[in-house]
Length: 24
Image 1 (cartoon, helix red, strand yellow):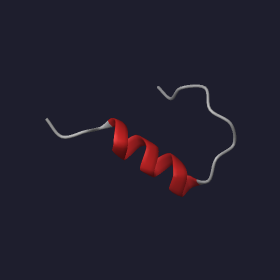
Image 2 (image 1 turned 30 degrees about the vertical axis):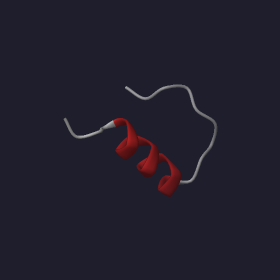
Image 3 (image 1 turned 45 degrees about the vertical axis):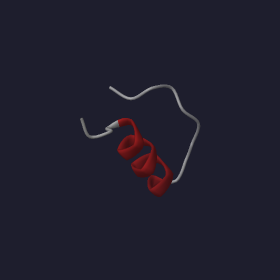
């Protein structure tokens, strides 16, 4: 399940996902 987002580069998506998956 991915939120509605514009056409972003794979790098940006990866970073965004990593930020969301905060440890803890």
